[in-house]
Image (tube, rainbow, N blue to C red):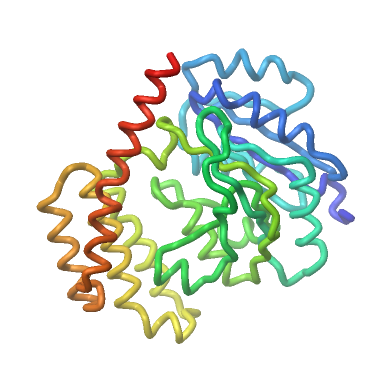
Length: 311
């Protein structure tokens, strides 16, 4: 299957202080069958028991320790040293189900025009209990750019040539370097959605989805749009919805402000979004923003209560 002389797939797991979940992640990768796999785990300067966990897998994974560089730089380093024909990553708190990599790789191998393939996922909590099923959706560039919605979860694989062409993740992005990467490689080919829940995406109080992003980090969504619309290859249907795209990105900034308790700023950003796209003035949009603004604090309190109850 692989004419390059190396393994078919290189999977990289960057990890930082996730020792409690790391073994389950590694075990799920080592349990993959029917695939030629290179697996690299990079400890990005952890201060917990990560090094002890990795010692248990000596000889079975390629483990690297480095001073803290951040997720984007860590993944770029791993992919730069990879030998695989197809590349991917698995966060150190997520899990692959048996056969996941073989199914996703087969989708790439079957169609040279596919630049990325990814499976559906179930959402799990800290104790690996499924809390929501089938959370991913097929990739649509217009939806990602205009609606600011991207539903690519664990287990995605992309062609090595795509990484070489676009240069990997942008280290200056903290919130959505993956979304930006998918937007950039979408110019190179199509995405294939494997409609099976072959991965488990974990949400827990220590995950990025629980952290309230700063105003500066939130504005990365606007920066990514600036870069996208500055290119010459913007499809006309998306170009016609440019103001709506910026409005939806501004709504994300407003939501994050509410998560931080900055209600005055959140309402100011909401008004800016409405000026760009007046339909957002409708009651449904206001209700959705309010619900989202309250959901994260409530979720964090609930998770802490569960943690206290289980202690």
